[in-house]
Length: 140
Image 1 (tube, rainbow, N blue to C red):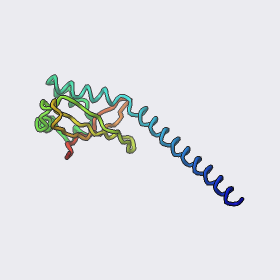
Image 2 (cartoon, rainbow, N blue to C red):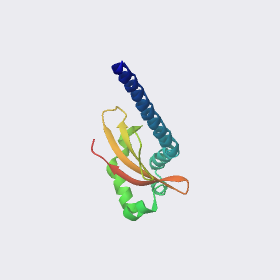
Image 3 (cartoon, rainbow, N blue to C red):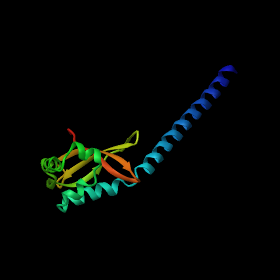
Image 4 (cartoon, rainbow, N blue to C red):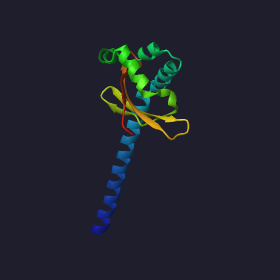
């Protein structure tokens, strides 16, 4: 009888643990989705500005901190080094939250999908709107 009681209690504890873990995961997923609202339109606007040749418009989507470390000329050189005209498709990775920043890896893919270039973006919310705080090419 003691073995059956231990087994019943063990199953209940396991179910409570799994339920708590599921609740924790759901809460964090909802928090991530709500806090990341506005990032996708920013990304779209950023690449649309570049595609239209409005580099200054894309540069204005970055934070003051980014502009202090990367001047306009370096930004233009960086964009030129990426050879963005080779890529047509964009795939977004899973966002990561750290403090008040959201990090996101975007993978640019060529039209034939043979070439891929990952870019790491860091976003910061300033006055209720998202800004790009960091852009870095990563190794694939």
